[in-house]
Image 1 (cartoon, rainbow, N blue to C red):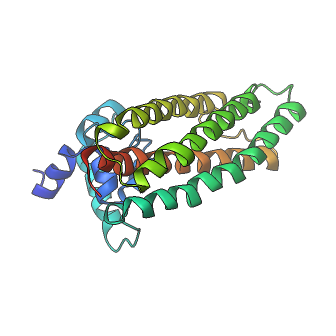
Image 2 (image 1 turned 135 degrees about the horizontal axis):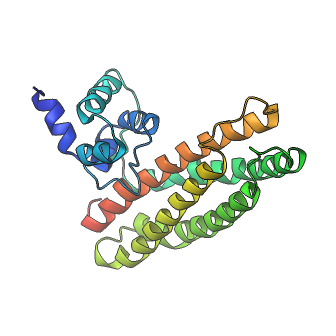
Length: 228
C-alpha cells in the first residue's frame, strides 16, 4: 500500500514537482521523464507511458529531496528568475554549443566510413543553435522585459504561447540528436573527441530541459496567472 506522500506525489504533474522540489529534476533526468514541455502530465501518467513504476520514482523524489540545498525558484521574484535564466542558461548555450558543432563536424569527417558515425549531427546542432539564438533574443528583448516590468495575464499570453511552441520544437531537436547518436552512446572504438562530444550533448540536453522547465513551469506560469 502506498503512503499518503507517495500518492500525493504520483498525482502531481512533473512540472509542479520540479517547481516545488528542484531535486526532483535529477530523478526525472535519470529516467528520461520530460518535465519541461511534457510537464503537465502527472507523475503516474508519465511513468505509465515510460514503463516505469510511479511509486518507485516517487520514492526516489523523496530521497533526493532530503538535505537538498538547490535554489527554490518559486520563492524568487520574476526579475530574479529572468536574470538567472539569462546569465546561467542563455550564456551557457552561447558558450558551449558552438564547440559541440565543431566537434561533431570533426567526428563526421574523421570517422566518415564507420557505421556508427552520427551523420548529419553537425547540421542538426547548427540548426538548433540558430533557432535558439533567435528564440533567446526574443525573450531578452521582448518577453523578459515585459515580465520584469510586471506584465501579467492576457497581455503576455500571446508571446508566451510563441515561446512555448518554440520550446516544443527544441524538444523535437533533442529527440533528433538522440536518434542520430544511438541515444548518446559512443561506440567502443570512439576517439576522445567523439566521447567528449556525446558527454557534452548529454549536458546540453539536461541544461535545456532545466532551462525550459524554469520558463514554462515557473516564470511563464506565474506571469499568466498574475503572480509577482
